[in-house]
Length: 326
Ligand code: TYM
Image (cartoon, rainbow, N blue to C red; front, side):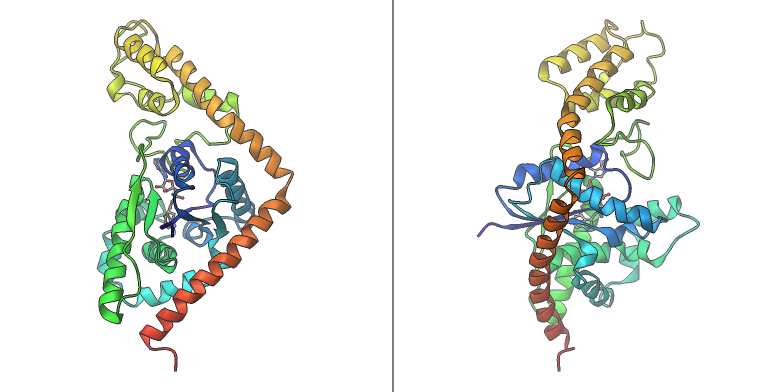
């Protein structure tokens, strides 16, 4: 039997090219080798401020984006987290075996706290327990994620060990599967590309908007004039070229930048074209899915059924082990 893979994505606004390169593209590449489950994690998304009517739309939009990006529902399971209540049930149980101090030292919690000073809710703190529940419920062998989630996966393995040692062997310790590009930087050039930092290019961005955003993106700060030679190895635009451009184009911009034969605008124009060439078939597929919402609803309903069955079986075992079945 193929090993099980589980991964998730939040429906919190746009999916950007960092999500695509760092996670989704990787999911597509392993879909034939594993028994894959991909989840739209809506309960994670409510830990920051949001509008219910928008969340409703984004859940469906996220599912459509996954399908448009090549996550073929005939080869894997796609579902929405809140439709399988076992996720939150297991979260409560794992809450009771998690030291608060383990949660307080999570990097993402510390970052999110700073970004949401007016709303530091308990969900931000216990977020990794819900994520561990997502993974452990399905006896997952491997989790493909970007580097920003690596600490949460270490935490998940620790949760599995802690639960197993107290109540007996129940959960597997999942491996982390990192793709080739584990951390795509944002257009500001120094932090990771992220929805909340507004430094992204959306996966479904139109051609003109890709260019508008790239035009003003940060490059090598030492290259002030067109005639100054640049250093591609510290320039985020060059890192993005590595993801979207051919070997030949990479060689061209690398040399052109170092010798000042090309300027940043020309370099960015090549990148803009290549990003657009990658995402335009996805945009077309997305438009097609927009006309076929019933199909997407059916996919999610099938996913819910499969996951309810699997999660239900694990929860029976967990309830028995912790002593609440009488
Ligand atoms: P989320 O929704 O922030 O991101 C989804 C996936 O995209 C990756 N990613 C990136 N990779 C490279 N460079 C970037 N700039 C970048 N930004 C995002 C993330 O690493 C992730 O793989 N907590 C998770 C969702 C989650 C989950 C799970 C994942 C909930 N339960 C269970 C795996 C298994 C999150 O917030 O991802």
